[in-house]
Length: 183
Image 1 (cartoon, rainbow, N blue to C red):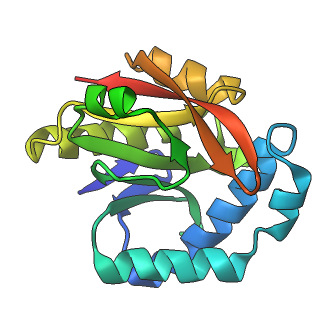
Image 2 (cartoon, one colour):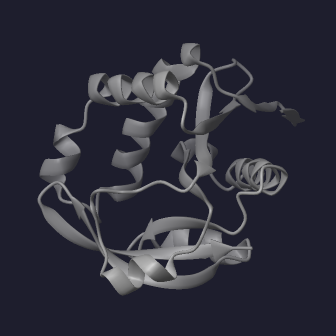
């Protein structure tokens, strides 16, 4: 999976990409959630924690990651996708859990603010969607914080159907999270 888009390159990530992905992850949270998520939680985010988490994901190998590179070959965006995950921080009733029959999940798409609205997120999504279809991870779900209006509009524009609204715990606070289903 290697796609040239203008000067941006999308490819599957390797463990060598973990530092760049960790940087985009932490920076992305600060750029996206500064007026949504508790500032104390954002202040506690660190590159080191994100890098350790990312290295762990590569070691256990239960997710796939695409990265987008700029003309200097620096990671400017990433997308995690694959088999549906269990999220310990999601609050769902047994009935809600039973309704969630999706097989796959896109668990993260982050694009640095400077590179947003250039089609990078859309292309990451499309490549992940193709993988999901090829590997029978359809239908799949994507979760977004309800207050992240840009993400919600993005998933709706790609054909996501809102199927669930739940609570999610981030830090020590609860937030509304919505699930979009793709078939």
